[in-house]
Length: 273
Image 1: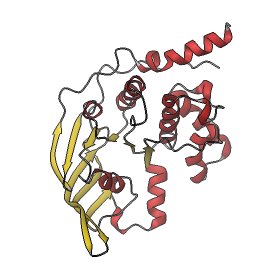
Image 2 (image 1 turned 90 degrees about the horizontal axis):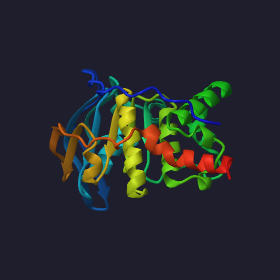
Image 3 (image 1 turned 135 degrees about the vertical axis):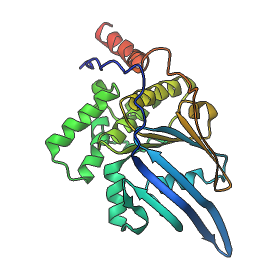
């Protein structure tokens, strides 16, 4: 099965909306470890608009992982205010938080987090199973998501039959399948070689140009430089929050040429031994 051509990307990415998808004010997070209190976040203010592409950076212990968990509704603040799409997260029940995570946030992890015995299609389909989507619809949406990352011809492969870059693209398809408000990526190139990392960042650029909201948490400066806004944390505080007026350009060729090039060569070799 060959992938159908994707529409050409717009020459310019869409302007960020004035509508905020995330607003946090005065957010703190304390962890008690015996008699010691760890101040992971110390009064963070942050507003993220729809259609933004931003990176969150910081050294170990800066609070970036805690902030990522907060933004992803995996944790709640000790104090302060957090609104997701206009809803107060701090007062939500565990079930309500789980619903937000399932429907509104697409997660991409460094370690892929794919079920090893399941096909790419089933891995992508999983969030829709949890959401109660009927089987026919979820299979169609899972196939479309794999098509969008140029893996339509790998839908019946298991993770151990895929390269690292292909596994991460399956994870990105899984993040997209629920049509989330934001895509939250934690060190998305951390387990990839540099060439494959470039291909994944080119795919993120494409997703951004299609109008998605992207939040990338990273400690790598070259990865952060792809974003249009860079937030730097230190000691639980926002050290700087600035637009990136000269983002790194995407790969020299569009993802449908670069990311698929290896796949096409493999397929052609198999068809013409």
